[in-house]
Length: 248
Length: 349
Image (tube, chains in turn cyan, yellow):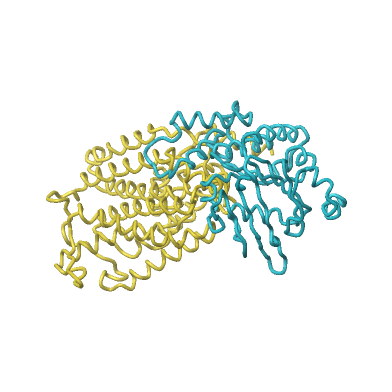
């Protein structure tokens, strides 16, 4: 089997006496959608923060496409193709939708120290931005200010930014959080389209969505991955039922 | 992080007005006729006031690269300005007394040639900004304000204590400053040099706002986390902007010293830094030329009110509060319509 695109090896992160990641190991295979679930306090956010570079693990390694990225800062990981979305949407509120996406493309193309040229006139940036916006059904909002978007549309924009970064892997942190039923259904529909083209690591509380989207699922309990497998395997796993699903 | 941004939301960038160059050209055209009017009225003081206002405009516009585009509320820009001025003064006095500035390991003499000393002044300010930027920019928000203030005062006390350069009394420029062989310090030529410089700085900052660099900088000031997530090394961009801003402020400081033929610790006291921030915010930080309006307004108010009452600071302060409440985007974007809208909205709610 091909090497996994993301390999987490024995990650440990302690906050005082609490091990938020406890010898956590995980593999994400290229082209799959891999969901991480777990009860509140299982260490999902801590895991994301370490994958993305906000937190350094106390021990353990993170390999992305075979390369050790454990010590890399966040922006360097982004440049390698790890594109994340946030639990609480994080976009540039005072710019237009287009500029939000175009900035991501610009950042991905190298440094931005050019000070005399007007940005984003480049037709290839425009084309890329429009393609990313079309992929999340936001093309008609291109000229709108982000502050005018609804919550759901901001989520779509975050996805468009992630796609525009030429990402190798999407790291989606609760993409359905705070969404109403219709928005949620629309987002699941979008994600099921994106999963055809991208490797996705998905952290999500909505079990129906997880079992619908994921090819593989890891269950996190007390900072440790207690089980990994296909949705069917996870559903039938006794340990998981005891630790998690049985109680919810 | 955006929540660390110390400026209230409504003072930050408004959705961007097309960065038109027309207001800039209008300002330059108006300034260009000032010497004509001053000559006609035979009023030298008028020209002196306008020279000072143009120089402070350069500084406020330069500060705005950090403040308006980068949301870095710096209280070190008075120091950058003073450092630029001291560089001119120190080089000129070493030239006048024919004393080498440094004699070990090799002798470096002073100079009164502004083609040399002005670029050196810019370089010194840029260097200082770059060095303290490495430290200050590790903090944000209130901490950034305090640490830049601390550096500003360190430099102030250094020059107060440095007897060789006049200490508290300041440093008179005794030699005749020149540009190669010409004398540029005639009031009218010097005024036009200042206006031309202001024009270049304005066109640059106006351009900068929509350049790839400017967009990244403005993006960082809105949401640092987001910019990091798309792969931007936030610190580097802030640092470059802070250094450019410091360098251009140093240029204004050099001009101020040339216009006064004098530089003293007052020129780098922290109040000067605060004045520059007030000028920029008063005028409006969301367009390149906003700080020019603020600088002119501030200096005119200082001049008129201080001749009228010794409590002029209080009057100016009250006015600034009114502007902050009713014209949060600054005087530059004042329009009666906008004011009416703000009023109607607040009375609705």
